[in-house]
Image 1 (cartoon, rainbow, N blue to C red):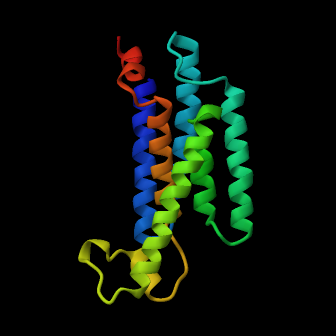
Image 2: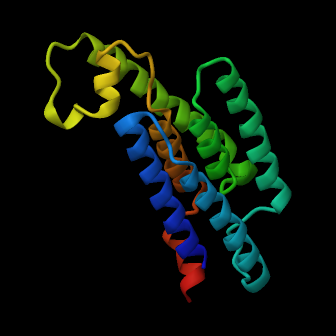
Image 3: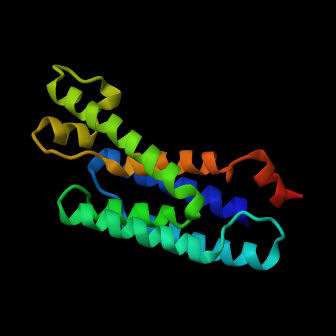
Length: 176
């Protein structure tokens, strides 16, 4: 169940990033699915397995609450969209306290790359066809926005890798 839940969650995070890249929106259903997958996977794995893929529940809830508070503040300041708040909160449930700092680091780094990219694209004369998405067209039309869902998804995936959640040893513990 762990591998199934994790793979579906990764797929939803990638789908959210793609939606954000295309049109600066993240469907609510993706954050809801990620949250539900965490609840179901956590419950089943902790009740039926000796493998230790998760920290105590309070660790996961504390991280998600902190991420929600921080991103909601950014939303209130006009720096984040509501979809970004929901996506960051949902994926942070999977990380626990040990994954918080890597998630913040990698998400911030990816967001910085997107910000620099936005500045360059705004000034570019022509844009390669593969970059000509809805977000880039809005950016070139004068909208000041970055698809931060992309940064959140990248930060989440790299934090999982850093934490070892995607390591062969962790995944093997659920197969055998």
